[in-house]
Amino acid sequence: MGITVSDSGFNTQSAITEWAAAVRTSDGWVLVSEPTTDRDAAEDAVRATENAVLISHEVTDWQTVPELLPPTLRASGATISRLVDEEEQAIRKALERGANIAVSKPDKPAERVLHRIGCPSLVNVLNREKAWTSWFREKVLTNPDTRPPMPDFRTRDDAEASLAGTRQCSTCEPELHGATRSIRSVRADGLGERHLGLTLSTDRGTPLGVIADIRTHTSANEQQRWGAGHVTITTDRGTHDHAGSDRVHLLGTVSPANIEGREQALRSRLGVE
Ligand SMILES: [Zn+2]
Image 1: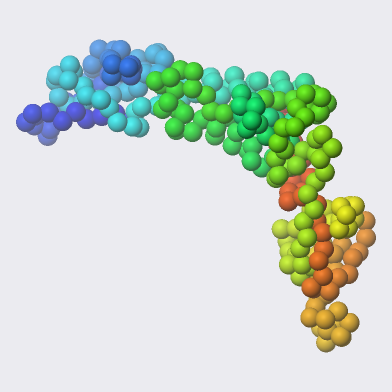
Image 2: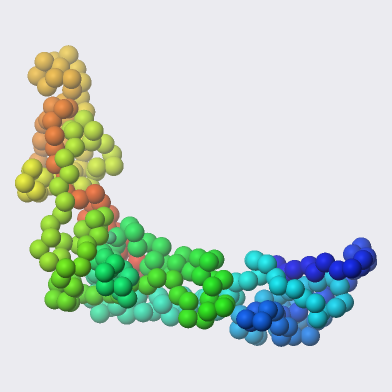
């Protein structure tokens, strides 16, 4: 970290490096500690000052410190940690209140989307450490109100009562306002490991159980009986045999267990329940 200011003919081989804490303002960089050759002292000054960064140079004229370049342009780790803590505290409180629906883009009604808390698309939003990408860490220096997107949290009842007509996520399918999970039709011999845990259904969407095992068989005997091959699908409710070319139906694209597992992981990370 730090910068080196190029100078006019200074002999860098015998240069003395000086350190200081600096803060970026709309007018450029301002030193907030006296330049010193004692780097530890300068680092102490950085820690003591909000949004300060450590800068260094090898020339004597501190008046000419120019506009610096990243990576020194980010909010300090301490500042971000504090914001992350506050935001995760808000998420914790929402979960403790029984929230299980997240509304993304809460401030833009036309773009709002309803999600289950365990939606895969929310992983990097609900982990605020990750939500604060370097872009936001830089941006917050010049605009202290900058925050990475944060959803609104609702209980299912509350979302049912107040958010009718809001778009629902096609990945986690929260099944609000009478919506049901999408039905996908796939060829039986196209089933594989990634479909384990999904719900097999009839073509009308009646659930036939959660898929626990998929086996594709090909043998001379079966060739006659089943054609090119046949597929045995075992769900927690029974076994279904199909020719490889049959269409079978699945509910949703992500298994409920997968979504619940992610919500549970968030809850335990935040110490809820
Ligand atoms: Zn979703």
